[in-house]
Length: 97
Image 1: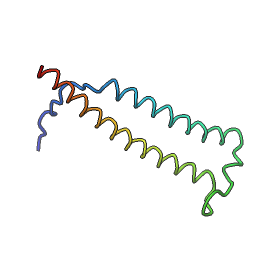
Image 2: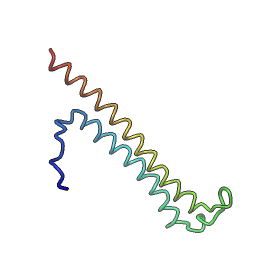
Image 3: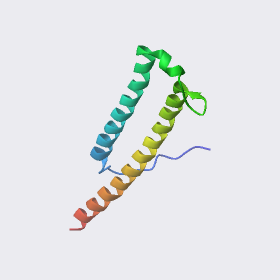
Image 4: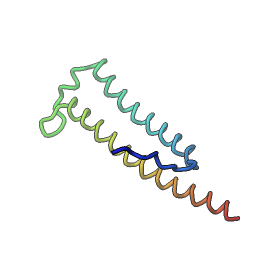
């Protein structure tokens, strides 16, 4: 029932890319979330406006934020995986020389 030690993954040659990409995505999401908060602080009555299919802006914006976060996570995962493979291939090519 005991788990063994964690697998050794070795050095991450794509850490700079992943850090920069993650910060950019965080800033994008934060700006959109700040818009949501700003509407609620400055003019909360706007959140009651019916936007689509009988749903008000608060529901659409809130669910949209959740879906957008999931989409960003998928984009981040795909981009980082691609960069990890590229960086690993470059590193192995350097070692082979």
